Length: 255
Image (cartoon, rainbow, N blue to C red; front, top):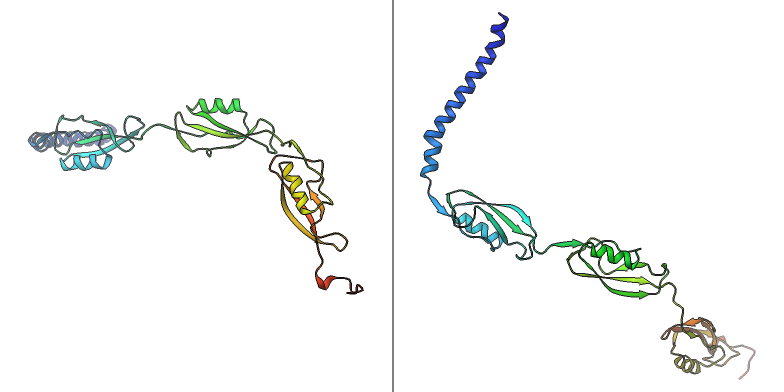
């Protein structure tokens, strides 16, 4: 009795499986295969080298089913063009056949690495490992350690073609000027301009201060002060006297 209970579900499933197989074979022989055999055939058009949208339009116009399968970097084909198709061009296929398309992603690119904080040797190695080159090196005075890269031409992650160059800014530390700042205190503004020009320097910001004891346009103070070092073309800020306004004159003074 127990054996009959165990085998009944199994026999039922077996009968269902056999019936399904018979129906499938009948459909294949009577419906699917006759339809497939009788379907018109056509030659697959060549879409290699065409733009993706044009290729899809062409295949659909020929009653084929295009499908973009993959994108591959290939410098021989412009970005967005078909570089390979399957089935190949001129193969004979049935109407409605799926055609797999492989699209070019253009020339391969690499992402710019971080170069900040590196030495030139380390930066060159990091770039060359990706197929890039170290470009222009600008030596700039800064508060960063000497011979350390503190800025780069392209931001991290910028896509570049292999063989492109990346420029960097290299710290040379604090700049030490070659010109000694002259003493300008007590000179007139015009004299100070001449002295600065002779030293390859120039007048910077002028701050006027009222004085009743010194002639107008007399230099009271300067920044940087005398004796400091500066570079050619640097500006020196001046504090210069001006005459007091009439209403600020000493009331005890008589005309």
